[in-house]
Length: 453
Image 1 (cartoon, rainbow, N blue to C red):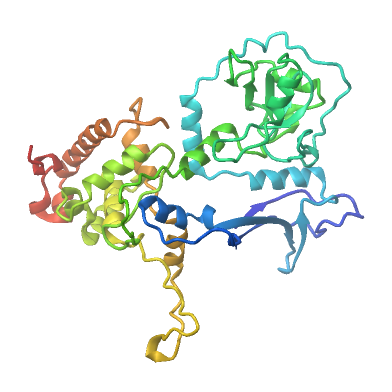
Image 2: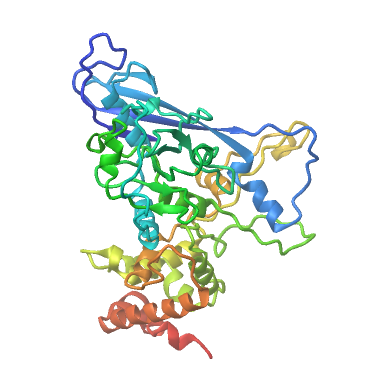
């Protein structure tokens, strides 16, 4: 993954950073998966349940991810120079810009995070006004590479106590991620007197994550005079930019990666399936109610949604006739994309075929290795479902107090809302003659009329 950032040319003539004529600088992010070592004391068993199979195929259970960073400069001739990052010779301005690139968030996730933040009411902390701040001589460096937990030495998920200037790591999450409870331990060790802490790396001129450890709050809060309190510790909020994930972003990650599998096939040997009709949907964060409803509506080959929108020729025609000014806002276009994606099998491919081992007869009895998997097959093997119905979810939920939120919802209520939403969209498309043009008069009838009650 390569992301681009333009930064000023360093003024230090002795710096070892790439010193070229003014040109783009890049942050090169290398992520390498390393297979987890086998436990010699653990007996390897064949998966017998749905949970066994899915847990065995999850990438996080099979690999460790090793991340390395480099700063790369490209001169006008096309030659490059690079150094590892972080590096002592990198100017603070360059380092801050690079950290911001690494922490950059995709637009789709940003929308989901904003939804989570809007759903969460953050009250003004009762401890914010007249906050006690110790005059202990502590000053916090503006260089984020120097921040670390005073208890564990961790350099991620760090929280600054606004009263004492102590930097501690965050709480440990239910899945083992997060921190080492350094910030909470400090609050307890100081007699529960200083409850407010701000997450370093989330501080910007307009916002920051602040948590109150006080038992009567114990939640994310607002501190109106945050800039004034940070100045006491030598931090000017106007000079800072976001370099770490906010709590809402971390919650989104946990929601998206949570695998709450039900064990329902006791004793059965399960095999992965793929192809048309066997395409999964990615959890967008508390979106299982939508995914299960959509899969229900499209489970049968005779499903009205599949018959009307799953056919490739019809879907292509509907997409081609979408409003040119805002196709993302057109329900019929988004429905055609989704239904065809599920029905076609283009996003659901078989896992890679294992290569034959020594002693196994391959093709032509010569012990030949099986052909390597396609890129799509390899990705499907590692990540499973490839369809992310984010645009569809946003469009269907728009204007609805519950389905536009990031909270868990009732699938039956969503089904009713979805059918009403589709009905309104179909009425408009049919009245304009779009359906007759794209699918003919046989299919040009509302989905609701296909249902037998």
